Length: 302
Image 1 (spheres, rainbow, N blue to C red):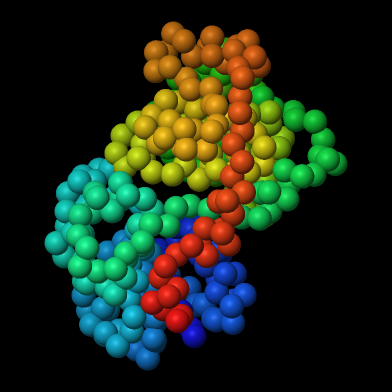
Image 2 (image 1 turned 60 degrees about the vertical axis):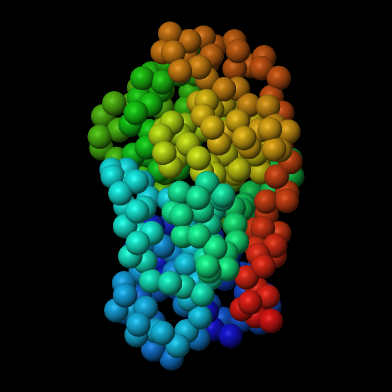
């Protein structure tokens, strides 16, 4: 079977590599499209990473089995309005996948179409690095991985890290607006291939998880936090709903930073070293295990 994934843009979606490996291991083929117009009309399975699905394309590909996957609800600005537009105007698929129950409830499509939850997973090379004993000692106190534009609201916290005498490593492209506001103690790697990220993470002693406490970010999985845990890093995070839920579900203990600016420098001082961290075991979140649980395969592959 040839499955056509439509990403509708250039956003990095690590799940696409995971799907490709999972399906190819089972004898199927995968083709990823940045634009749905390149999907042939004869396609038998079209898997949309939603996004909006154009009615014209859904009609052109009407003979195919359509999967709509929602790895996230809509993001600001006007997030609620965008989700309502999707609810009322999205073409009806044959199957829906949501990152979690909150995303399913937020979009509110109901139960007329079969659906499943599929949380984020972790690539095997993160677990492999956790077992290595040949890596040099960490040279940084903290590391942050991910979309750097989302760090802009946390610039005062980055300065608190600097004031506490801590060194921070940023993994990813840093936009000029953020670069201009970074303290001198911050080091930036620039874009790093995904397979090299685990070794970069192990250059630090702690993983820094900073997520704006607004919908939908505060209700959805932080992939960076999963990857910190997979390589064995203790986690320091701002306090919000999902991180508390995850720690409780997986028996982790993370240093949760209080919201008050006056407390940040103290948190990054001695407390950083003496907090009783517990790094949860996230082996069950390896991509092959996450994907194998999807009931969709019974509908699709038989």
